[in-house]
Image (cartoon, rainbow, N blue to C red; front, side, top):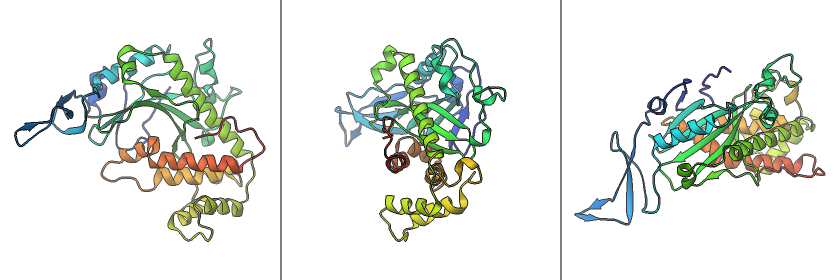
Length: 330
């Protein structure tokens, strides 16, 4: 399947992975082919052995400072691991995009899951993107299609675990949203990178997360919501009954008049329209000019991600309150 790099989604220093590329070539495409040198900091002739300063081997830039217990995993090891991960998935996924944020302090690798993930659950059917075949019962018009990306995040600048997240992207508007279900946390211990771990477990968790997203999407599309009531929910969520704050004004403007794809029937007078007003705001507003990749990182696990999760949880509490919320998003 053909993949193009959407700069509205993968902001900043990101590159498509050419099939057959070596790990070195992949890392060089985003200026991240370095090893991590862990050295004890010095000052005034004194060496502080209880700490380690992580430095890039290629240019000497500082990545972060940590205690002795934290051991760095070089980008080469991360790249080899994800390549092996994809190879062991029996061609159900491939390494599609690589990116570097904040001068190498965060590295990510991404694999696109099929928009229709049901085929990933059937080991006898690996044909992939059924939603793109017009003769398929699973066909979905591109205007209302969702892509799901399984992304591996590795941090060299903060004491954060390596983790996998599912980043869901609405193609019509390039609204990206990373959602974790309550019991589907995908934190990967560093020792697992060295020892290897079960590909099926991580892949299946990713598929379940994307399915939870699609269940939410279907529920929101089928729950009517007049525009005036949607504006009231925006104000209630932001504790601004008069709608005086700039955030509420911006959200109401997008919701009423500026929603990308707002003319689609699936986004007319329903909860899905309201949901996308918020994700459009977090996806396309306040993009870092110095390093747009920082905005992407915020969508994946920072303030923007938390804002999206809180918003979706709030909407689920308002939408069909009598339904058993077995897949409430956290």
